[in-house]
Image 1 (spheres, rainbow, N blue to C red):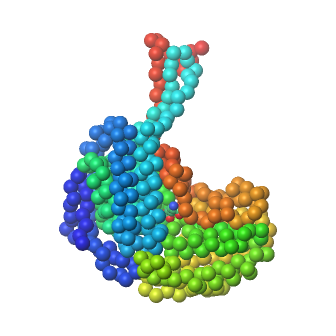
Image 2: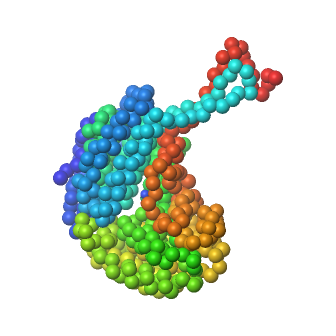
Length: 479
Ligand code: UN1
């Protein structure tokens, strides 16, 4: 199968192609055009030309198109789920969840078309009215990762579109097929020509040009910290949204419900093969429950089945590609050299890697600080409750976090003390819902996506003063 780019309402190819493969068996699934700077320029021009007509369309009308997108995604959910599982490698129930997250955000944002609230307020002067209204940022560049190849583009497209922006969208080169299928649904649902432009190709040409393009007003990127830092240095004065890495802790207190904690840890650490920025990669466990917890985790992790994401018997799918498998293996070596003890896993084959748990991990070890983005969990022991918060905060990231406890005060201490954008109580670190803000602090970036904050990311507030006094009134000067 040969995919296409979509620019100015036309499906187009480029001079050369790249391949997208099934990470389970490395077979080629499709070929996509290797776009260039020239294609980005064409896409920006098309987005610019379509901006006026799209941005003046009443938002509830744009909302109707978003509703159609949600409906068409729902009709196609099973087919899309299978494509997603094959191209990205997450197990089918999770792949269907990825599509569902896209449906949810399009539905939520369709409703925003009838809100897009600003504020009204008072004036210090008579016969004067003050308010704020929301305006679109302009042409926005969306650069998305492979780990949520339909949901994350949707998280960005839905708010961008409802706010009246036009879009240049570059998907990860590991999952262009999922993105292509999403764009086809957008087109089928009535998104007008030029409003969404889809450019596939390498980060070094397409991505760079989007980040530095003078005709782009806003950027939204989800991906690695390194790329995020590069974007922050090179985007100039664009409105930039960054969603970067995580090293998310689960704190397990002595009084935790052990069964519940075990389930949540396995789900957070090994769901999506550990390839979520919200993945639980550290467990901070209190001394009294440590032995029992580790034994239970090791037993359960050892019995997890690796295999094709399409099989019902599979618990853990492959990593996205060879590089990711090598990176995971490298960190396992680093962990061993640092003196941590492997309690299960530690091995891989092809792009598959067994769920791996290290114990005797100290907070200063690299495996406890750096984002591995694979199925590797570090277990760190603590004694006093207050030590847990300190260890949780000892990394440079701050995306998600969790605490398992029966004590209300321990839960609230964690909510207050952990430096992270998200804290779960008695639940894992993954599984955000689209109507709540999603994002982090520290080197995760400070953007909030989804929910009402998705609207904030893709709009600006214009302050409006209406003076109906019929005379020049001077703020701060007139009595
Ligand atoms: C990500 O890994 O980049 O909360 C996003 C979650 C998902 C989104 C993860 N809803 O785990």
